[in-house]
Length: 127
Image 1: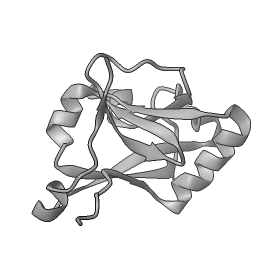
Image 2: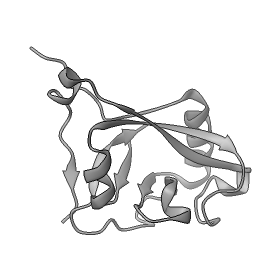
Image 3: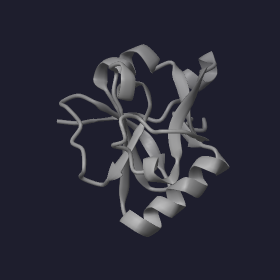
């Protein structure tokens, strides 16, 4: 039996910030758009604070929080693993919840191997 491969992971630094945000806001969600500027970085919202568009892709969860990406961005990056990280700096447009902490989330990408790609977890699509 093959092991199902996750499309998403998070660094310890990112998880530390997520724990702080959970304490303050409760349930969270992430969204990464395909546009420029604030769309190039994942944004963190209170759960329900952003509504994915039709056919956007939920590629996994981080600590139980859904991570959605724009449908067009998913088509471009579907061969890549996303690792959520965090760095010091002003967040995307100031809308993401980590911005007041002086932090901003970012994603590192790596291509899946052929074996990994053949055994990926399925994505969920918004309706």
